[in-house]
Structure formats: C-alpha cells, structure tokens
Image (cartoon, rainbow, N blue to C red; front, top):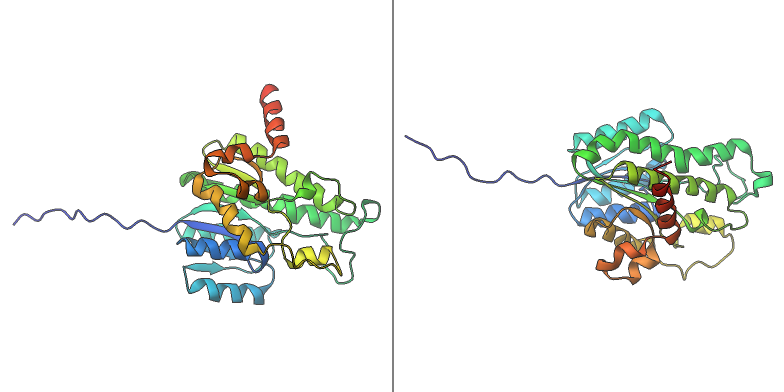
Length: 274
C-alpha cells in the first residue's frame, strides 16, 4: 500500500533573544515585551534574587533560561551564548546591562568628576559598558548570522552630550556607539542599532539624581515597545533616539537616525572604511 507523504509543515521554532541586565528597568521591560510577542528568552543580571523573580514571571508566558552573573566574566558570557544556542540560536542580542560609575562597593560617588574618578572603577565601567557587550556580541555573532538577526545596544545621550559628572559613563557609551557603527558596516546582513532610550523612571536614574523627583519620567514599559519597533520594521542599522522613533511614521524610520552618526558613517565610507 502506498502511503502519501506527510504534507504537514514542520512547526516553526519561536525566535530566541538574549537580553542582559534583564532583572529590572529597561532590560526587564524589553524581556516582557519580547515574551508577549512569542520570543524565547535567555536573560541575565548580577542580582540573583531579582533575576529569579523575573524568570518566574516570564516563564508563565514563554520559555526562558535565566543565568545570574556578570557579563564581564568570560565563562558567564560563554554560558549565555551556549544557552541561546540550546534554544535554537539567537536572532536578537540586547546589550542592556550597564554601570553608572563602575564602583562595586557602597559609598561611592554616583557621578565622580573625571579628575577624581578612581581608575579601577573607570576600568570596570568600560569593561561593563563597552568591552563586555563587544565580547558577548563576538560569541553570539555566528547565531545571529544564521538567523539574519539583530543587535540592540542601549546607549545614552551622555554619549554625545558633555554633561558634568557624566564623563566616565558617557565616554564608555560613546565607545559602544562607535563599535556599533563599525559592526553595522562589517555585518551588512544584520541589523545593528545603538539606541538612546532617553530618561526613564529607573533606579539608575534615581541614583544619578539623588533627591530629585523623577516621577514625571516615562516608565521603561512605555519605552520598550518603541525600541522593539526597530525589530518589527527591520529598520536600517544606525543610532537612534527613542523620542524620535516614537514621533515618526514607520516609513520614515531611517531618517530618524542620529544625524551625527549618519555623517560619521558617510565620512568613514569616503575614507575607504579607515
């Protein structure tokens, strides 16, 4: 007896996102927004208890692997990449984890002046905000290439504006911005974005603004859908501000790219990529 071949299409696996700094703030909001859209998740943060709480909430919606640890640790980054590979390979890497001043102990000044910035803390700041995201991206790139995926690096207006006291943080984010722009040129099949989310009602902003009322700032949950619009629309690689993205129609997303970044990329192209 001849048996007709099974014509039932194979189920399509849910895409996988790796999100750092996902226990609170914007990282947690992005994780929840992605989960609601059916993404599988690998999440990480240094705070084990908070990450466990996030895992419980997200696991009610999607498949999630939560791995506490520091992204400056080589072995931890390898575990994150391996977990994403185990779920089918990452289609999205969100480098959100960050540090305000690199300090690891209590009592540190939130935003020290550059003249007084303890060099060990400054080194840690660059490791967290710039080096670790680059290193994690290197590990995950083969997966992203296989899925024509995307990298979303969380930047800041301090990367382009010389705010007093924000020299260390801003310089580390400026380094991440340039790395993002170069990676976008090197990986043309991917989407690579640096996004300034603007001020948000987060613990980090409150730490940077002791005694100030930040209740008027938007919640991360209000900003996350704007950032994920880049993913939905496959917006061209570049540097963007959330407030610009929220203000322009989808068809005009490319024009919302930071003018300074566009000009710099054009200059690089004119120089033959050097």
